Length: 68
Image (cartoon, rainbow, N blue to C red; front, side):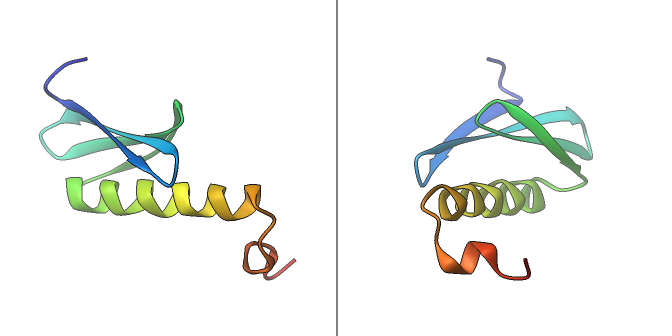
């Protein structure tokens, strides 16, 4: 793990943020690479949002199935 990579736990999921270039950040949740962003703040927000979404789907929460 390099200094350009950080991990944190959100609702039992591991969210990783990796700096690829000065203005490019990659987000992974539970080891799955998902998104790239131009700011670290947006990458952190997207990772937390995806972790919460996965948690809702896993618990079969009614709000998770909205729009289906």
